[in-house]
Structures are given as C-alpha cells and as structure tokens.
Length: 172
Image (cartoon, rainbow, N blue to C red; front, side, top):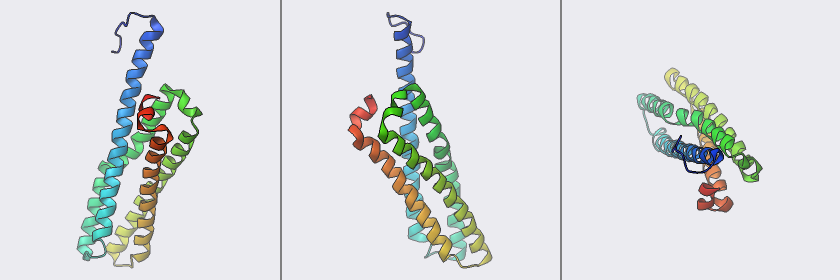
C-alpha cells in the first residue's frame, strides 16, 4: 500500500501508509513480547527445576546454556521492544493521553533494568560456581530478579488487554 494512490487527497494516502506501518510495528511489538515472555518462562523453569540438583559441571553447563539462549532471545527483545514501542507512539501519539500506557512503559523499563541486573547476578553466580564459592545468596537474588521481571512482563500485557479489551487495543 505504500505509495499506492487511494483516490483521495494526499492526506488519505499518508493515513494509509501510516496505518500500515503502525500495524507492522504492532505485529513486531507483539512477536517480540511473546519471544521475551516465552523465553523468560522457559529459562526460569529450567533454572528452578534443575540448578539445585545439578553437579558443579552441570551447573556450569546450565548457566552457559541459559546465557546463550538469553542472548539470542531476551537480549534482542529487550532492545527492540522499547524501540518499536517508541515508533508506535510516534505514529499514534494519542497513546500518550492514555494513562494506562504510562504505567505500562514504567513497568517495561523497570523490567528491562531488572533483566539486565539478573544477567549480572548470573555472571557472578557462574564465577562462584567455577571458584567453588557458596551460591545460595546469588541463586536467591537471581530468582528474585527473574520473578519480578516475569511478573512485570505479564502485568504490562494485562494492563493493555484489560484497559478496553483485546479488540480495542488493536484498533485504537
């Protein structure tokens, strides 16, 4: 539709192009959110179900796998989600007038910060496992950060869906 003549004036053509771009941003935002949420649930389940039972070598391997998958999924999503969100707001500035959106943005930014903090704790946990130091405190801190991130991710989705329903969210 970009550059296609709709039979109306120039403003109509711009609206068609803008609507298409907004839909692309929305789809990208949705897919990235699903990617991050799915990876977060999987990685948290993997860590919680196996870390305490694993041997030292098993713990090292698990941390390497978690960091690798997190790099390929969560890190990418945590970078591009805010970027696409800003593009969506630029395209549809009325979102700035929706109070729920301010809360969603705040929770999302806190979740991104805590996600990066949890990665730092995971690095310290890896070093502690390699050196043979106690890891209980680091494990608890890592799990706490990850659970808060997961709760915030689910909350941001719930805030938008519960605002006016799923359909109005997509067609506002």
